[in-house]
Amino acid sequence: MFLKTLQITSGQKVIREIVFRKGINLIIDETLNVDAQSTGNNIGKTTVLKLIDFCFGAKPQIIYTDTENKRESYTLVKGFLINNEVLITLELTDDLDEGNANEIVIERNFLSKNKIIRRINGQDYTEDEFEIELLKLIFPEHLADKPSLRQIISHNIRYKDQHLNNTLKTLSRYSSDTEYETLYLFLLGCEFYKVNEKQEITTKLKQEITFKNRLEKQQSKNDYEIALSLIDNEIEELNESKARLNINENFEADLNNLNKLKYKINKSSS
Image 1 (spheres, rainbow, N blue to C red):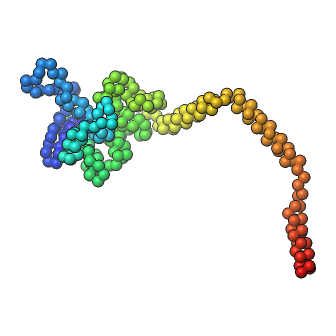
Image 2 (image 1 turned 45 degrees about the vertical axis):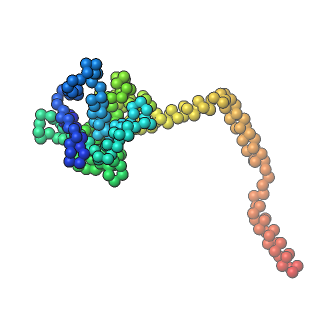
Image 3 (image 1 turned 120 degrees about the vertical axis):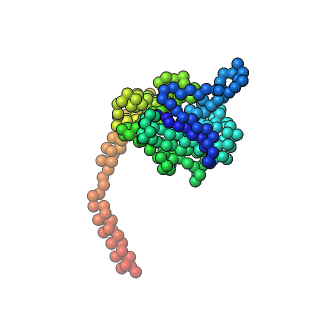
């Protein structure tokens, strides 16, 4: 699909509207009397990419959080987005040249709780449902759970240093080789429907290896085998002692007879 329009509104007021064209779309600073030393920074190139990413399911914090220090946010920007109830609308289309082409309209705002807007084609969705529905609409033939929509578009939306510097490894730094394998297979047109099962097995295997390494830090495998052998010998000796015990098979019957006899003696003596 193609990006058709990106619109930023507050109520009935259109703050900014960007219309996309086929091919390369450039964001150019056309301000008059610009200093010759100006680099063209701070005109909103990265912000546009962040807004598009936001419409595809990214967290709202990416818009107003400091890229280098995640704990700090731009309070002025955050306040403007929330107080003015800014709505971001991204329109996708199958064909930019065809007026009747299939379209997807995504709407999101920066409010919370009952004021939050997270819509696709006019339908509201929860946070978990939102990405799943987008994945169905954009990649209808992709039936597996992995790769997720966020993983697939990581190759297309690049504004973070990690994504700009890494040509292939565009997922988070904690992503496993299995996740990359699944993503690359999908990008090459190969579907792997048991990918979730493979990832679960891989995760369990890593946990077992970690546990094994932790055990072998204190004692070697040979030490554990010797200890196990000693325990087995002790169990065998106890079983032999148990077998030699002389247990009366009629113990319960004899006990009952003894109790009856005691009762008769007590009754006759009274």
